[in-house]
Length: 133
Image 1 (tube, helix red, strand yellow):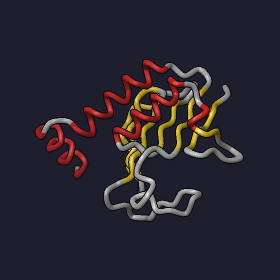
Image 2 (cartoon, rainbow, N blue to C red):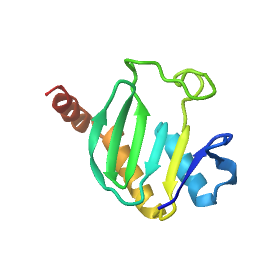
Image 3 (cartoon, rainbow, N blue to C red):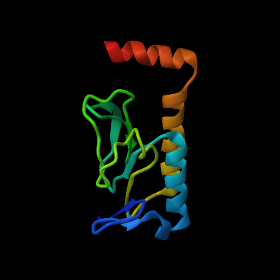
Image 4 (cartoon, rainbow, N blue to C red):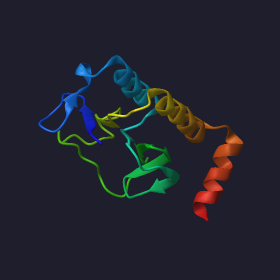
């Protein structure tokens, strides 16, 4: 399956988000609202897990993976523009979508991520306890 990668200005390997279809731009804008930095929609493989690395926390549901920078990353993150993420690149930076993208499913996963990331106090408390175990 083929995929398209979108960035703010585009590059040799990506397309500018301004030239994307409106549905893709809406995904980008929703990701920015949620504080997402990288969003990936795969063509085939399903993942259902929460991951954590030195720089990002990942939320994976079905074909969608959402990455947000940690508040205190162990390593600094730099995009090609050589600007630290937490200084100027606070919004969406990369959106990679498969050509068989289901926009509705993507928005549903983003809503699920929002509930996960910004749930009520009890949800956040239990999530913090389980992350320590």
